[in-house]
Image (tube, rainbow, N blue to C red):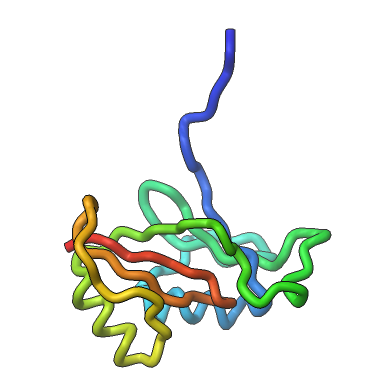
Length: 123
């Protein structure tokens, strides 16, 4: 019998400054901290998959890279991509791609903590 995986069960971004990254997620994305987070991470109460920002794992040196996560596509669902786009623009968050239509509804990409390229869709 072959055993496989069911899909993503937890997603975490490794960041240089844990509190700054957590603040970005709370202030700009409206995420709320979960009831429990380990000392090296901030876990958010996201459904269906938990999301966190965390200190780098042993052997990961983020100082050596200008943009962590290059090549990874991380999408977040929102109830209104246009409103979130406007909110992030007003807050001075760098928008990487404008709002365009996609098979998943309106979508756009923006620069998240530590330069991660994040995409929001929906609405």
